[in-house]
Every structure is written in structure tokens, then in C-alpha cells.
Length: 391
Image (tube, rainbow, N blue to C red):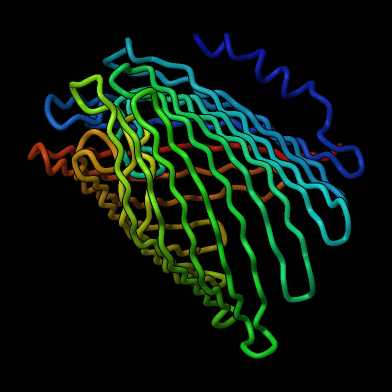
């Protein structure tokens, strides 16, 4: 099996030194076995193929912390086996890490990194784009947070990401992002209320396009009670795009302004949880030329029926769109809908956890410009084991 080729990755993770030495090291090996049926394994609008998929996922996580610093490192592999279409068998992996260091009582430094190799022949990206290709995604971020006073804090973040695809139909995409945020606690006059201001700059680049975006938002977050949380922000953006015209060696450019915003409401108690989010923003059209406007909403519900049985329901809708020769060389008009539900039973408590999960997911993408739709149903059962120990 291809899984044997990835054992060196796990050996390196097992033998690598702890990320920090001031605190207690927590080592958590885990293993997940997943069996699923997918009635559209290539996420296509026509010529659908269904298959049974088996996934074996060993992983290892390390974490250590103290009052001054914390750090974590995790990695694993995913061996994916198809019953009928064995030519699609694949080996994926993930690596992620994070760290925080308190330089002074007022200043914190932080960093995050991640790399994921998707072993599936089809996937849905974070911006609700359906991608009929195996994908390699990388992201890196460094940041700092400064507590200027008891009421005022600021943060700076710089990030880089990259998406690469096995299918040559998709364009490799690079993402650059920088942001500055200021938070002011209005609790003295308005208990639980914080004013948030964000300035951001980003660039999404391919061999055929480059989109630069400047944005500014102002908003508030508020704890309505011990159980309810609310946030709202709104602002504007200015976008300059440069791209190669389809079917031509010539390049064109376009400037565009627009509004951005986000609204979310959340609830959580000992048994129930719920959240609703509505947003409108600019998003990378990763794998394609340029960018697109993204408007969407999501709803999630959770219920801990007993101490060991947990259920969840979720639904989402996203509208991705871009005019011809505006944010890229091609027009985009896609409506994505998602519905998911799961039941999870936890047999043991920490430090040794064993859980069985049943889930169902429905994905639908309406390609309005082509008059076709992609439908996909996925039923899954998964067994997850992990054990945390200290050294």
C-alpha cells in the first residue's frame, strides 16, 4: 500500500524534539477509519460515477506550553482506496503547526503554518468552489498583537498561501495577505461591546491574472449574555485586476469598488449550540483567472443529547459571481448549496477517546452560465481513536 511510503513522515513527527521545553509535552497519536459512498466521485454535472471509498488516516500531534510560550505540531497521512475505480487510489497528507511567544507583558508574537495534500479526485474549497482535481494547499502566517492600554489593542498579520492542482485545467494560485486590526473595549459605557476596525490588502496571482484588493471595515462584537454572542462589520473595498484576455495574448485591466460585510449570531449552552452567518466579500477564484464576489450564508445547529451522543445539522448557500473581463478574463455565476447532518457517539472519555460518527452530506452547484447543475450525495461512517499522554 502507498501508506507504507508515508511512514517516514510519521517517524519524523514521533522523533522530532518538543517545540518548547518550558512546559509539559502532550503527545497525541490518533487513527481514523472511514467508509463512505459518494454518488459523484468526480463532482461533475454529467456522466456521474458512484463508488465506495475507504480512508485510513494515522496522525500524531505534539503540543507544549508555558506562561511565556506555547507551540503545537501535528501531521498525518490519508490513504484513500476506491472499490470500483482503483486507478483513483491516492495518498494525501497534512502538516500544521502554530506558536505563540510573549515578548513583553504587552506584546505577543504568533505564527501558523499548514500544508494539505488532498487525496480525493474531487474536493470543495473553502470558498465553496467545486474542484475536480487533487489539490496541494499551503499557507503561512506571522503576526503580532500589542496591548496598548487596558481598553485598546492592535494586531498585525502577514500571510502567504498557494494552491496547486494535478489537473492542468486549473491554474496554480498564489495568495498574499496583510491586515492591521484595532480593537477598542467600550465596556465601561456599553458592557460586553468591542469596536473593531480592520484595514487589509491582498493579492491573488496566477500566470494569467493578478488581482489587488484594498479593504476597510468597522464593526462591533458584543456578548449579549453568557449564552449569546453577536458581531457585525461593514465597509468597502477597491479592487484592481489585470488579466490576459481569453483567446488573446493581450492583457487588460479593470478597476472596481464595492461593499463588504459580515453578520453573525451565536448561541451555546451546556447542551445546545447554534449559529447563523451572512457575509459579502471578494474571494479568490482559485484555480481560475482572477477573483469573484462571494455572497453567502450558513446555519448550524448542535445538540448534546446525552453525555456521549452529539448531533449536528448544517446548511449553507453561496453565490460566486464575476462579470466578463472585470475581476478576471472569464465570467462566473455559480450558486452553491450544502446540507449536512451527523451523529457522533463517544465511547470513552479523555485521555483515551474512541468515537463513532455517522454523517450525510448533500452538495449542489448550479452553473448558471452553462445551464447545468452538479449534484452529489455522500454517506459516511467513521471510527476515530486518539490517546493523549504527557511527558
